[in-house]
Image (cartoon, rainbow, N blue to C red; front, side):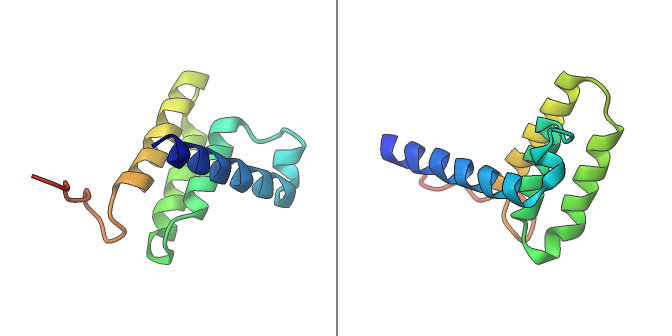
Length: 95
């Protein structure tokens, strides 16, 4: 379990570093952390979910307050990781 967590965190770190190198606005610090997190998650969506990702990013721009922006971004990342690509929640495993 611990090795899975290490691999997951290393993958996230690599993805964030690669994104920062590609995005000069992020490198200059002009993009806040919730926007970077949400942009990263939206970039990982399947092609048929591209519009949904762009809608999430657009909605974040309308939110004021650091805590509200973080809650929204984390909620969207959770939806990205815990929902099936075709929509709806993933079925529970094991009885």
